[in-house]
Length: 158
Image (cartoon, rainbow, N blue to C red; front, side, top):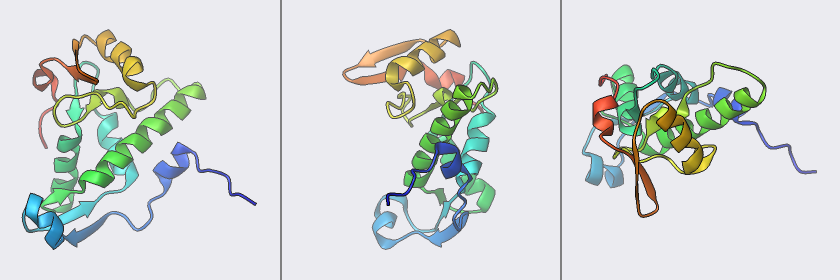
């Protein structure tokens, strides 16, 4: 019998054995240099995303810096932080579907270069609506959607 798929909220609550700090592997060191990497908990990423006020933005790279700083690591895991941000977005939409008014404002979390994440709920158009409603201007570059002058709206670094 097939097992029931976990909800986004269940995935968000699944701490596994995180946070975990490990040495940066030789393969990763080519890009990131030597040191340590932290794999945060999904809830840590959600907590950081939750604190971004209306009209402000944060990038995945800033979240990675915050978790690395919090755990005394050299870097935050780029793959895990991205996955956990998507998990937080999915859980927020489940909360919204259940009528909750205060959800994680995932649309305020951008890729490192100001690009809107097409994997978030609602896709690019859903996020465009939310971001424009908060006063941001978006520009289409090929298939990518970017927040114009996003740097001016970023929350302060860690």
